[in-house]
Length: 145
Image (cartoon, rainbow, N blue to C red; front, side):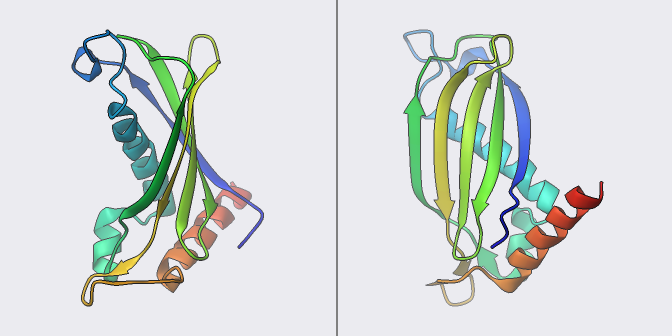
């Protein structure tokens, strides 16, 4: 795997329907925000979920960790930064949730996904070559930009 890391971010404004009875974002909605950022990164790689299925793979989440530092509140703007930190055996992503106004980190997270061959439902213990090629191409595009 290359030393270079692919990154992207999305800005999300906290909506009323994401709050819990304590008027902060319900903990499970952070996973939704992570998915939004992950989809943006996969689009950057040109390997979104539709492309994965075309290639014959599903990528279930097999591990997730979140560290809640500060709560998110109604109408707060948060930037979710996501970095692809591993892709040779699995897809490992790191996330930082940053308050847009203050620049403070409010949450840190990680997720790991592994490839599963759709036709056999077998876990793949190495990342499919098509995904590796897409990541390398995205890294090259960034380098040449």
